[in-house]
Length: 182
Image (cartoon, rainbow, N blue to C red; front, side, top):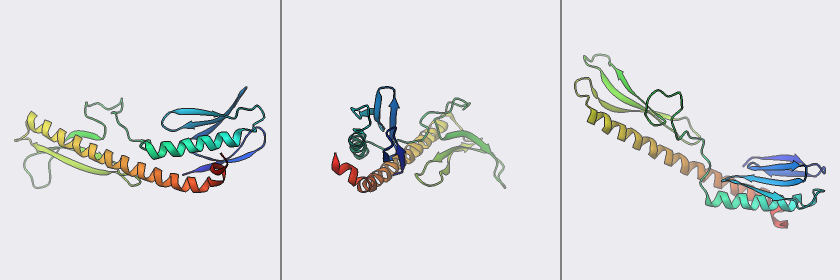
């Protein structure tokens, strides 16, 4: 998991994991956890002397949330506002094309299958030819496309969560000095 060096107003240096932000504003001094909701861990001091303990508490809560919650996903769950069809996110079509050597055109849906840490796959779900195209075949193909996309999204989510939890183990080792004092 990524970390960064933060120097607070008192001049003290901290190594801070991502998902934790420093808040220093007027009479509010503390660390804000931003993972699965937000929570502020106050220094309980105006001079920053409680910052180390507050960061340790925020980091422990971060590790707890990573262990129990799915990783946040950047996958688009809803279609873009600019999308001109009613199809779900990641599905487009129907695409009509005439293949070389064929006398009739065929229709299919294009489905984008996300893969964590890799480029997405593009798959085609066949609907029918211009001679066999029906509303029922369209609906069946759309159901297959949606199922294909949902399966890929679930696999993406599992892989993202697994990776985030592996990063948390590394973070726990990296932050052992801080976590041992709290």
